Amino acid sequence: METTTQTSSLEEVPATPGSTSKLLREVRAQTRRRFSAEDKIRIVLEGFRKEIPVSDLCRREGISSALYYSWLKDFMEAGKARLKELVGEQALEIQLLKKSLNR
Image 1 (cartoon, rainbow, N blue to C red):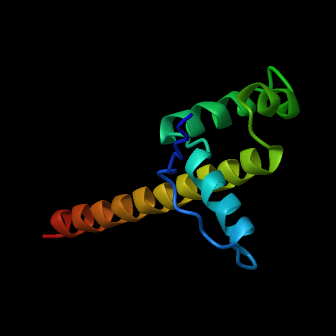
Image 2: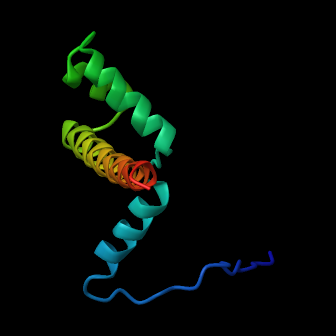
């Protein structure tokens, strides 16, 4: 009988302290779900409607409630920043109109 040995295509890497945790972090990062901006907005707006409790919404979408509230905070801050931008633009337009009327 002839025996053959198969060589693995994977190289054996010696275990070093922390290598397991590093590998786990890399695997989690690569398999993490990524939500598009549209998905985040849809979920946050659905939470605003109060048709179902936030906990049920999060369970259905497969996210933690902490992540939902983080998205909600980002959504509110972006809205506030956009509102300030609009107010600034309107104030500038008002100033230009006043100057044009005073001529």
